[in-house]
Length: 375
Ligand code: NAD
Ligand code: AHE
Ligand code: ZN
Image (cartoon, rainbow, N blue to C red; front, side):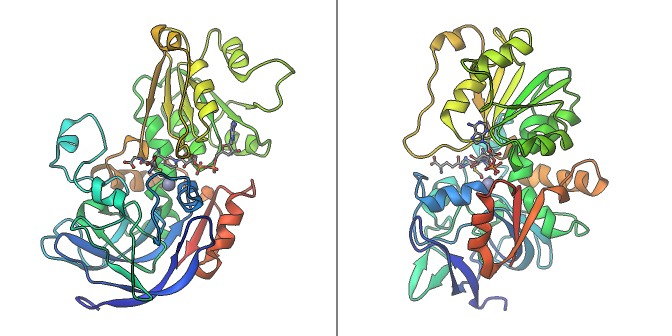
């Protein structure tokens, strides 16, 4: 197949807010600096549903969505030396070129190399590798894992240990790494009080990371009672249903009261801007840090009284848990293999590619942490 167009199946989003269509798609060979991957499994992340809904300001159609995948390198273009044919790989929506201002700063995992074209849904040369029914189809987040074959930049892929089952390790391509990284990379979380808002795949992974770092008190907040059992399994010491507080009591007042002035660290993993405000305001005066991870719809903005910041609370955020994918993801996969990072437990639902729309329905049902699609 090397050097040839591959014809395979993909789930295409022709337009916003419509179910995906399973289509026959043509996937061109990788050009210079590109890698073609046979995608074996993909997780369904809330962000795929968000972009499909039309609420993502960068959303463009028709597109092959999906960014939480695991697969095997089928072929590589000229100048690719970081992965080879047959490697087990995870595509990276947060690329790492190791050479740009961002990568060299030592201050961020964001990379400037391919982000502009990635946001436009094309490869770094400005064109697409996908065609269907005579039309070019856009890429998504530099990954497009809802196709049996995809093409990514060499900066957007990392090889991982072959003993890791890809049907589970695919979740390290987004949800688990995003939460776990956000917690374990937070300096000073040891010995602290932490609150996590939103107990989905991301929130559970934050709980797991906070526990691994030795946080003293880990409070999980959700509006779904079913999340209590999940939260405790992943390290929460307490669970609060913020929709069931006594009349007139806000979640901020309640948290500040039970923690003697507020939390050292809070995390938003809901994407709701009102929750982001609560997460900031529940921080301890003088030093509390709120990390925003959730993704909010186009047009939504966060607000608080500036006095909240004047008095020492910090609002920050992170993408992909602050993890540098090519440098650090293999180590996280090894943690999973060593049994120090729970991954298998996140998979609550399975679907075939044909059943992918059912997977999105499962996602909204309330008892789904992650659905993994067998491509
Ligand atoms: P999810 O839907 O599985 O989990 C969200 C949880 O939030 C659910 O348990 C829900 O009941 C809860 N929730 C909803 N409203 C709430 C409220 N008002 N108060 C408290 N809890 C509430 O989603 P997920 O896959 O875990 O993703 C969480 C968010 O993180 C999404 O917005 C997603 O787009 C985003 N995300 C961001 C990154 C990043 O790199 N920054 C990566 C992955 C996902
Ligand atoms: N494209 C949107 C925002 C979407 C967004 O924030 N994406 C997160 C990852 S979500 C993964 O499930 C992210 O990493 N953002 C940083 C980046 O560089 O994309 C918008 O508002 O335009
Ligand atoms: Zn995601």
